[in-house]
Every structure is written in C-alpha cells, then in structure tokens.
Length: 194
Image 1 (spheres, rainbow, N blue to C red):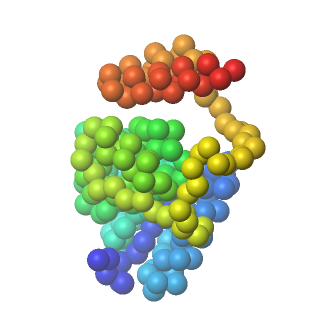
Image 2: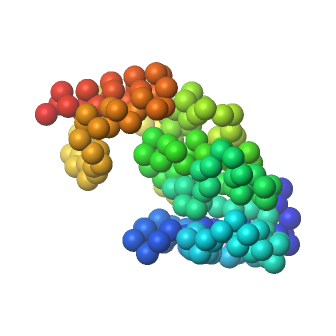
C-alpha cells in the first residue's frame, strides 16, 4: 500500500501526445481525490539520470505512473527505475504489442496494466520477464459480451502498420520465434482480408 505522504508522479508525453496526456491528467485527478500528493511531469524533462534521482529525493516519490510507456527507461544495464527502487505502473490503453519494447522494459518493480483479460494473457505468455499483470477495467460498464456471430459492428480501423509488411516481419525476428510467429499469422490474416 502506498503511504499517503508519498508523491504519485504521472509521466506526460510530449505535446503531440494530447490524448494520452489528457487521460494522464484524469488519472492525476483520481489520485488527488484519494488523498495522494500528485505531480505531473514531462518525461522528456529528465535529460539525465541524476535529474530524476534529484527529483525523487526532493518530492518523496512513492510511485510512477506511465500511460503507454511514456518516460520508461528501456535499458537493461543501469535502468534508472531499478536504481531508484520506486514502483512503476505502466498502463496500456491499446494492445501492448504496439508498445512491446515498453511493456517488456527491464524494470523490476513494474506493474503492467491492460484494458482486457486477453491483453493480460498475451503479456503473461510473451513477456521475456516475470512481471505483475492486471486488467485495469475501462471506465465503461461491465457486461457479458454477446457472441461475435450476433453482432453487427460497422468498424473502421484508423491505424497504421507503421511500415511495409516486409520491414515489419524483419523486425519481428528480434522478439523470438513465438512472438514472430504470432505476429506473422496476424499480418497474414490481415493481408488476406483485402
């Protein structure tokens, strides 16, 4: 349990991360309503590890919160969050695969939160290190889903594969055969639906 005299630090992305930052500010309001001191900080403000260490010492930081992996240290060696020993809650509002390097970051005290049980199961199966995982339910109302066959959902996906399929496949090799195979099957299915 986090002591009420410890500061909750919510990491903001750069200005173009408007929606993520908006949601981060909403979480900050929630922590304030629970009685915690809260700081929202631009993750990019910490240019060097010493900046973050000084900030933590001055603010009595008890918890970092990151939406979509904003501000996480991805280094295996010398990871600043491991040095600080302060827990990090990383919340992924999209499938964690989109932020895989962040979800799989080598941070010891790192709770990974996803919006669905399927995303949690995916992380449990493919993360390269053991981390606590949980479903952080969306603010909507819980209900029993209807079978796919009974749904009439006009869906428009506004997203990007961020690269051409051949370049994507090459990069997936770095994640090991299980993840590479799963990603290739997803892409093959997507390409077959054209």
